[in-house]
Amino acid sequence: MNNLNNYLQTIINKYNEFDTYLKEININHFKKLTREELTQFTKELPSYFSFRYLSSEINEIIEEKKLQEYPELLSVYHYPDIKELDCISEEDKIKLDNFLVEWGWNSYLHEYTPKFRNLFKKSKPKIINKILDFLVLKQILKKYYKMYICCDYIIVDEEKINKYLRAFELNERRDLSEEEREEYCDLYNRLDYLNSVDFCPECDNEIEITKELIMETINNPNYLYKIIKERDKTYDNV
Image (cartoon, rainbow, N blue to C red; front, side):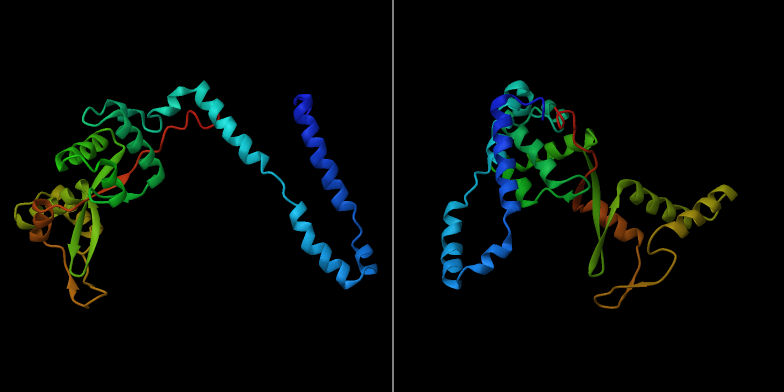
């Protein structure tokens, strides 16, 4: 507190004086008054009890001064890589930057997520895809497949898709080396719906992931994108 100038310190002192006054009020004194007096008092008191939320007002001024000191905050700064995007305007880059922060690290989205789609209402679908591909390239997003199994779906990345394909390839061959047999056993034990019988919770049918299902997922993809990169926090504490 000693670092505050006189004007600010005076405000703090006045707050403290009033707070002390309220704490020193003896509640037993009210018991000596009539019910009518107390009722009238409680009706009138709120009209005098209207503190300004100085903290909120001052925080707005602090933010204004912060923007003056760091004009970078008026541009893209959560995910600086977005500045390199050459297919959207500067305004849309800022919208995208803010959207990724608001949507949240580790969250999933897809190209038809309404809030994401609405950022680029006037853009053609190929622009949307270009943006998503760019974010994947910069490792801000990671691409996943929605693989439909019976009445539900699971989310798998390209690495897992390739493991399924490798397991099917090894299973179809009859001339496996010892090393390849070990590889197949490891894949068989690790991959979902290959090493045991599972049942759909909706219809109770058996669930099995086949090569045909994998190929259908690849050839008719329904992509999900996960935000895997945390935002730049350089300006959080300035």
